[in-house]
Image (tube, rainbow, N blue to C red; front, side):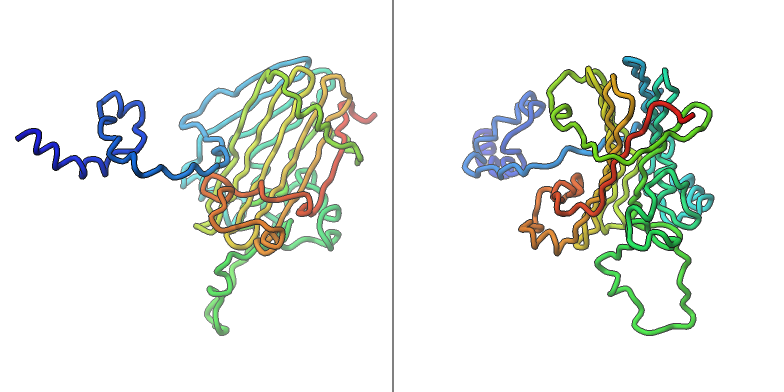
Length: 345
């Protein structure tokens, strides 16, 4: 009787059993039913981009590293609660604050001999999403160096206004005197042109000289030992189910240099993909830090014209924004500066 019960109940049980049981299931003996599904081949694995850095669930002490006269301090903070986010929006005149916001997260890189200090902070980055009042001038590129009509006072997003795919559908069909437009003071996509701040102890700004010097790609690609590495999430927001915006930092210290990447990734579904990347690199024997700021952007229509298949693209998912689909042809603006390690007399 027991044999018959097992015999006729096997198909129903097999439907609930994974084709490739995990080690935990195998240890419980669940793997004995796996052959029942062996006839059906498992779907091919779809390549995915690595997940973004996750914020800690509780405050943690700063991660510190010192090497060859440089000091690196990474502060990864928990997500702010909703009431604190609402308060921030009011205090900073922000129409939108990311739902997942690590307001105290930062990276500070200091040079002991010169007093040079590079600081990248989540709060400063968020203020660069706002144009009324404008952010501190040295926290992002000068408008005239980036956008058309930049010499005029900007009254909109620094990198241009973006509408979601439903904007025209939501637009009122006729004028209604009872409907008043809200005063918009910040970018609803939470994308930022922020490139950090560089100064010396005492507050003097570091000299930023325009240069044609390129990133030392051969050096960056070398597979040397990584002495220290860290990732910090500033924020992430799903734009009310209209896409995703993510801002994060990665930093690594190598035997002969250090490298940091501040990355703002934006996807507005069925509209565009944008990346604003600020890269910093400095050899330990150099007298300057090289900063490269790059703005890439392409509409979905432009990507399709380049031969990119948008539908079911593994690069566009909840985990992956899709900025790896952007190419050199999508670069809107690129700026390079030498940040000198010695203050001007």
